[in-house]
Image 1: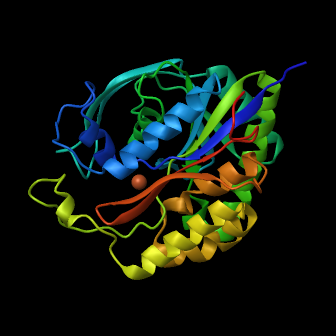
Image 2: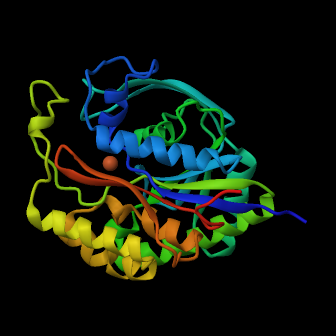
Length: 298
Ligand SMILES: [Fe+2]
């Protein structure tokens, strides 16, 4: 019998600044430093995921936006150059990735059975979005695992936040079933910031941390309220408050990544591990891990 399971879930934000500050060989621009709290938090998340002998990363990205149905990468290998459209000065990243097409197809089929409109993306020249690339790099910089990348259906824009939540919840259930039947151990990544109001000008030195802080106290309060819920294991309440959070905090969780992750994890009641909280151009970002089989690994 297949014994596939989700062994880790993570809130894994994707500011390209974090890769820029880390100076990996794939990225052309170089930095002196920057955003250490978040980067060191990511290092601890990596170590905890590494202990779990993961077979595949499954990421849901706000920056692959599809309006008719939800799409999944359906080509075994991609390599190209990814340039951030807003920050080309920070992110010109040469990527190479392998895709677990078999698991992607299984998620596709399970989601169809949930009544969702789905499509496999078969174009070998497709440019993979930076939400997927940055999130996967920061979680697993060695790129030694295949990934599954799921687009965000913009039902929040077309219909409303409740429709988006309902569809993301169905997609989460489908993802869970597909992982279970695959026999693989998966880590699921919600590629998203928390509050998302950002500054519109950049410091002369982008990594000048004297310029970095949250854009407003109101957004800080929202972020802390969400993280308190994480720390208390109140994940259903988090999903319930999501419509208000999305509106008030301009959160990119309007893409459904968080509702998808919580549904797939079946709403953990154990506290999530908050590795870090920090701001990037004023947006609130947290690195958080959930481990369905317990935090300690024997
Ligand atoms: Fe983003």
